[in-house]
Amino acid sequence: MGPLDASQRNLTVLEDIEQSRIPAEGLSFEEPAPQAWLQETLQPLKGAAPETAYTVSMMGDVALVVLPLGPVDQHPPFRLTGHLRCPLEVACVRCLETVAFTQEVKIDQVLFWAGSEEAEAPESVYEGEKLPLPLVVREQLLLSLDADPACEDVAACDERTAAMLE
Image (cartoon, rainbow, N blue to C red; front, side, top):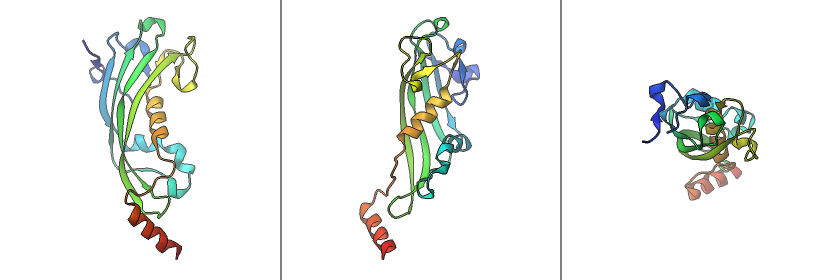
């Protein structure tokens, strides 16, 4: 038997989840990622230079499977796998033309309980009784973004950049 549908339990990937609500067979989330939530997720980038500020152009979607790797009442590791699709716009760092694209983010992470021997990197640790699902999705999105976004059409970008420099 596969993971249970999280929506039947009124659970969402947009909120931390009590580990006691995760059955032994795991949970499966498939839901829209609202535009406002995605834009808020990019909030730390608001202070970035205007030419590298990402804007969410419409609603995205997220799918996530949460599997306990041991008995849930014993603070087991949890494996999170899935993806996030997020429509974004950003200015090209060379020619400043708006670049629109869909960011495809693969999620594959194991979270360890803070009190376990395996808990090393802070991004792979959960504390208390809740799994920080929104934090995991947010971190994966931020880590996937290009620090120097540029146009795909290099020749056209070169022409626009040359025209700006004249």
